[in-house]
Amino acid sequence: MQNQPFSFYNPFLYEIMQPNSFLPPYAYKVQAKESARLFDIISANPEVTTIEVLSDANESIGYVSAEAIVLASTRALRECFAFYSNILQTVDDSLTIVNAEGTVINWNKQAEAMYQIPSEDILHHHITRHFKKDAVMLLKSIHDGSSITRHYNQPRAGTHVLVNTSPVMLNGQIIGGISAEKDISDVVRLHDQLSNTTAHLHDLETELYAEQQEDPFYKIKGRSAAIMQAIQLTRKVARTDATLLITGESGVGKELFAEAVHRASPRASGPFIALNCGAIPAALFESELFGYEKGAFTGAIHEGKKGKMDAAEGGTLFLDEIGELPLDQQVKLLRVLQEKQFYRVGGHKPIATDVRIVAATNRDLETMVEAGQFRQDLFYRLNVVSVPIPPLRERKEDIPELAQLFLKEFAVKYGKPLPELVSKTLILLLDYTWPGNIRQLRNLMERLVILTDQERIEPEHLPEGYQPNHLPFADQTPTARPLAARSEYDELVEALRTTYGNKSAAAQLLGISRVTLYNRMKKYNMEKG
Image (cartoon, rainbow, N blue to C red; front, side, top):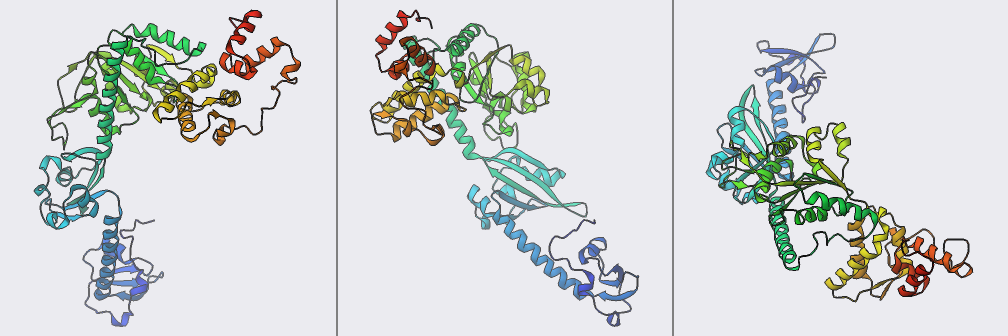
């Protein structure tokens, strides 16, 4: 099918033709079938003034006069302009249109709001009246005919955008250009604030650690075999300078392990800098990690900027969600690991670096390597030592301790009494699968502290997703016989099994004190059970 040059009013010739009896014999004619569309003919014959219309049998059946062409063209132009005007004001992006000389011929309301420049102050003026020449990427498009897609730019101090530009062509000539800019200033500011806050919190924690001389792993709670094995492996690696890859599902506490590695390492007195690879737009990642030189890119109007690699000098750089790192950035990180040096954006001088890299991911990097989504050489460089962090469902015996810690934390935070988790509620928590892991447990405890006014947290206080489809709690255990009808030993074994070995919960379930529980365990030689 022939490409239609016009998407708006474009009539068939038979709709606007006149009988042959009115055809001026001297007029310049172009022949076309009656089923052809007017502006297809005009596009192929720009100087046409009269069109002779032919039937399918190639017989002359009428003509389109110059007047009809003008009227149709006027209508099409009005429709095009109506759509054009509405598009400019409907899109969320800031749109700028300039002619071939760089004079602004359209400036939409989003551009007015972003730059605080009214249309009357910029229309019919050269765009450099309000912007520095090297900060206007649109000028490059109208100069060399190139297009730019999702490029980071800083056209003014404090304004950060992702910009798309393209030239407007007519008959092979550049007659102007269009620029669409998405404002990401809030994203950049929030990221900077988050980075500064994280650094400040780390400094405060470092001071507290220095005063109290606590175990570097004190933040990691739990006594299950699974978590103790992960801690033991991490302690061994922490004393070296080897690159470390921490793996595990979302919410298992990978950043806590990374911080513990730093505090337990010879670099503990240096900075700990965290960078979430999945939270930074790809266009910003390189400048965020390595920094940039003055004039490194169009719009870089400051005196350059140091990156996270500089900030982590002498310490540890934690790259979270490393699996989200774009392929083109992976090779640059690989260079840092191999050569211990990097280049700033726009820089040509290598900068030596003394930084330990700790990476973390909740994705299967080996599968990503096989799929071509992650570089194999970078994977092997990162995976010198891998520490898998177990999900909460594999360390359920830690749930009572963690739940109690979180309840205390939020009771203090919100100035409320510390509620008690009754055994029936605790067993529901132990039976839950916890797809969100420790983060999900912590959020649930916060909700319960906020919404529960009673002294005891009963099963009915849990959200719907945590409730079983039937009531599992009667006066009997899940076994066929009631506890009272079974031996003391059977009761003890069943209670410890049901609570995944948690002795406080088992004692509560049996209705006895912890001292009595320990005495019974000693009686049946179960101290190590």
